[in-house]
Length: 463
Image 1 (cartoon, rainbow, N blue to C red):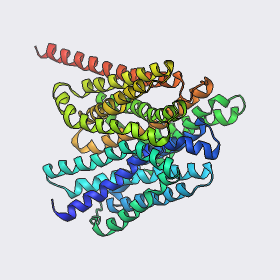
Image 2: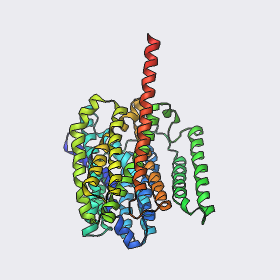
Image 3: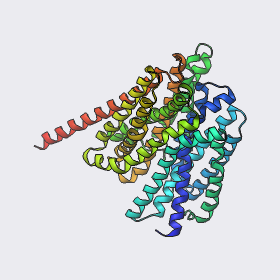
């Protein structure tokens, strides 16, 4: 690959690195933010919920606009939005302003991610060099996600929580300047389809209403009109989205894609994976700091080995397992580790939080389980889809993951308010994680059994 192509790859990869970093980096700063603004866990979780809902809700629109407006323009606009909102979040002096900028960060990320991937796939045309480039691109995202906890913990301890946002500004400023000069100009295309932005906005507002209504159910007696009104508004808005998907000439996405059972199961399992893993990141930070008394820096450093374990698993173990198991079976394998990790964390709650048990549970989840689950479900989501729809199917999977993260986190917080615990992370929180894992395993087992029956029927008919 020539030098210019390498620079383009690095610029696109840095964009997705920062986006992935910001999903995880905030978790170990949560106690510091709670302390400064004097808010509870039920309120502070909105910083993560808003980010993932705006990210997931606008992701498909971001991909469509990348095709319609141009991938370079959308990458630059997305990076600019992310940089300015990071600056705003870092300088925020009230929780309300911080939450607003955090939501808009999600919007910027939704523009950056699909345009960055499109830049990579259109820059590297040969199959071999494209696969290598996508591998580098994906590794930047994995490194960002894996290092977020430790980086956030160290920054929060030795600087302040403000710097977990401000650190993005110089990185993105340099990226923007270089991208303006090095990224190839967008090609003119008169046949680009229009983007149904209305459906996207309705979906995001509907999901926000659903999440808020779910989160505030505990206060339904004090504010019945607000809570019930939010849930009713959510239903109306999401029904409107469904109607538009069936009626407009150029819908946000084609509902016919869901005729594939593998895509349906994959998206349902991705939704559950988002609820499980983002919930786990939120809980492990509270457990290590508030229940076990570790500083943010030491908590972050404790979790570094699991990022390394995840990379080693992906490099050396995953290829061998994937040769022996199909995607749905590998999904069961991965979710079994997630379930095991949840059980170990539950045991730790009842046994005084022994560090070995807590870290072993974290290793099962973030070190092994997540690697297999994400890979298996990604493959499952596109295995029966026509090649022309691979991009859209992948976007749907990412959307399901982030929406599951937002809604799942709100549900977990609601249950914590209804059934409070003496610990920052009570047994009910972990039981909910275990429930997510059992639900995903149930869906995958059902799909496997259904697929086996269909194969047996085909064999019987052919014979």
